[in-house]
Image (cartoon, rainbow, N blue to C red; front, side, top):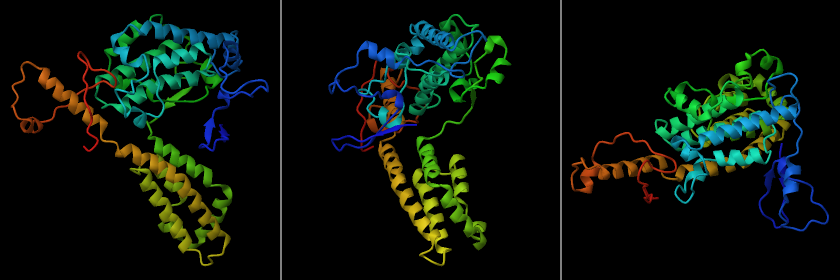
Length: 387
């Protein structure tokens, strides 16, 4: 649920979470900063059953919440000294990685999570775990999957989730070192789909692992545009439209064409390479439906025209954003190439040719790189926007 804010200045509409907004007092002046007391009142939410899975039946909801948050704080403080965790301690430096906001829509790091814990931002366990998950999800999205930093981030998420949700761990740093030596492809925490936990299911788990995965199910990493397209279809495929389209079944149209629901199913299965492909498929189906209607003044045809108009308006935002992102040069390949070249010239054993042409013709090797800083000497390079 979100609130739509229309500004008096005529700026674009903004969507806000109800948690972010409070009624303005009559005597409060514009641009007045919130006091510490007001911030504490904002976070004075009283947990209810189901927000934070209980380890013991006699625990209060508030006690359970504090238990999880203290374990999260303890884990973060114990992990901070580790070298492998260094890239995830603070927000990404956007001066160094200017394309990061165009690739990552929901940044997350240990500093942000720690501040949210201190400000009582998290009202459910799944919200805390989701922010933790995004550390690895973002790292994997921004880097090559085989990069060392991806392994480090997945191990970090696995460590935090296990430490927070299992009482048998006392030292997060030791747990991280143990997990770091394992194959991160076997870890599940960062790829789990979070949902409110089932109390009966939770209480039936062994006490040593309670809450570890009671609210989690496996999920596949999904492109943002796919979820946006699905939300558009859910919004405009209302029951009235479905009832009208259902009348076209007698024409035999859907014996040769997919239904709208089948197009959405294909979208969820990853059968479209871009939002433009999905838009083309939906518009083609709309045109096929319109061609099967004899009376252009019929309610079915009017419903199709309305659907088509709404669909195009909503999809324009998705395709525009997607186009802007894909027009950005391949940041991964450019960062990898720049680091690879720098590593070659720093290598004293490298006996490469003296011409740049010959260097470009060398066989490419797989490289690993960090989203924020290189191992050893930092590398500074400028990406060519025309590449």
